Length: 468
Image 1 (cartoon, rainbow, N blue to C red):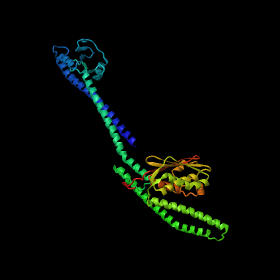
Image 2 (cartoon, rainbow, N blue to C red):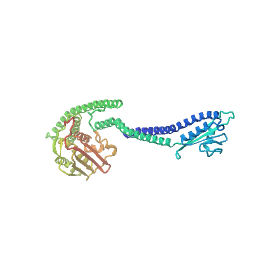
Image 3 (cartoon, rainbow, N blue to C red):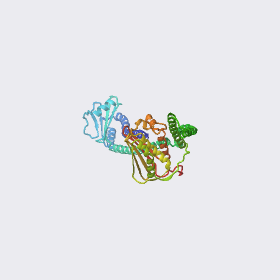
Image 4 (cartoon, helix red, strand yellow):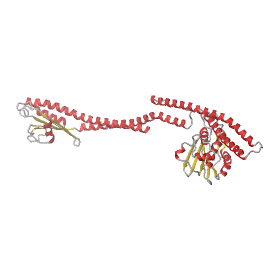
């Protein structure tokens, strides 16, 4: 949008400058020659009275001839007067008296009563005007002058250069103004975009704080109202989930105790009853796992589950995770390979990091192929440490990648049911990574496998004016 606005302002400004320059140059050229034409026209009007008064070219009064010689001298040119048969009756050069001249400019002057042309190469101008006769014989005369216009052309070229220089300066100013205006107008929109991205990445308590022109401010206020409404709905949802989870926890615990008591009573139970009790126990464990995950997410949503930062040896943490999942990998016939490039220490909440990474590694094992592999790598730079989990499983369709971090979303529902997945593991992982100020990305291709890349700061994030 900034570039489009810049192009629009620059285009309109440059076109306006070019048009204005053309108009000024044309006007200046016309004005320089119009002034000389007007003076000559005034002279010819007065000349017609002198010709009638003196009987020019006959008679002894040389007033008209003297004036014509003076005019030719003043204009550094050649003056001729022709009769109605185009015969020269006066020539300031005295070389064509009595000759008939049929020139295009003279014929056009006779036809249109006046003619003016300029030859910039020869730096001369030609002016022809029909002199209406005021004598009794009614014969018209033709006034002809070709004169030097080098000074006028120099002034015209100088004015043209000045106009072009001013136009160039205006173009530079317009370019600068276009840049400034495009940046100034789009800066609030870019700020809104950044803040909306931040809100979209999980910082739902933030609000737009953009103060600009009235339209942008109104848009910001409207978005804030929508966010407030969404926040209220989200709080209601969180309260509902938390309350329901707590209410379910108690009866599920009671059923678990009763089932365990029956299985451990020591009495002979029919095989079918024992099998049913074992299945009930397993389902209770699964439901308890779901409720525990829901409660964990509810605490994270409501910001009641704070992050307890402590300096942690990430390599040892990763070893703990891999030891935990080793039995699962063995049962699924999946090889887990880990590679660490250096010793890494970071300020993190170790239990939560263990939960997040364990979810990713377990998923890579559960949704892998028999005799498949999971590759876990650990690396770091000066700011972040990186954990990458790559598997050789079935992969995830591109259309589903955007949804895998949603709660209860399952890519393959049948396989998730077989593996006992709750659809909450990746949601919890993303919440933990976001809470640490990190980022998680996923790359996948069907039948080739999936890669999860986690980036987490080495140091505790600084928020709220320096409070972690």
